[in-house]
Image 1 (cartoon, rainbow, N blue to C red):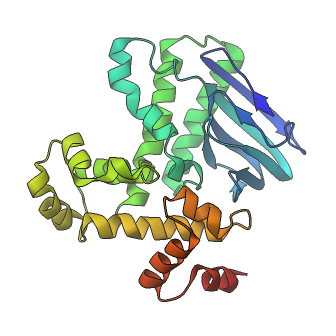
Image 2 (image 1 turned 180 degrees about the vertical axis):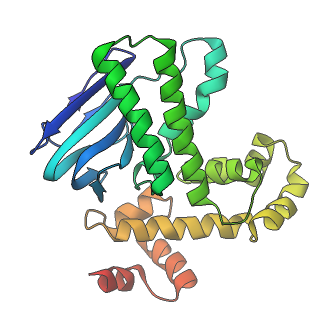
Length: 275
């Protein structure tokens, strides 16, 4: 099933005991806020527990649905790529929102919010919800600004979670986010490509990266690939062959060799330990 939306922006909410849609795809982007309730968000074969205050991103590349365990109040912010890129000025300012939405590593995980961030999100989401219900001017500048703030806050939290506790400059957070975003496209992770993206001399990039991140670029990428492999091994929906194909290994034998060289045991052993 593939849902279609043609409006640049649509804000809706549902209170349900059984989700109104089966597993589906869509031609639009979506941010889902859990106002109340409990259950599981199933996306691309992953099952992510949800509860009050959780936030999820969904793109047209995903298949997803919600398995409701306790009556849930959903708030959906649905938009096409044209909403944040309405003119040339906005394309330059807000292209990062589309980069965020197309970051598969973020969409297949749950954002962890501390008490302060949860409270911030609650108030801003309530403001957006009430505005859309009582005023419903989807083209209003005020609403646009609130949505930019919502995604800006998400980006800030995601960068904190992806980097070490060290006080890294904004550039280092951007490099880390870029690597996570492009982990499924190895051609974008070559030293020359990353150095050019962030205006760092290719001959100096390796030294810069190791100084800031405490490891080589290759080791950093490999550790993240291990994290993605283990994330998929926890899901019964992925075979080793599928994981190997998705992450660019020649076959499952090469994936197993890569994993065992790093961890000291095989992916099958890891999966059996989890079970």
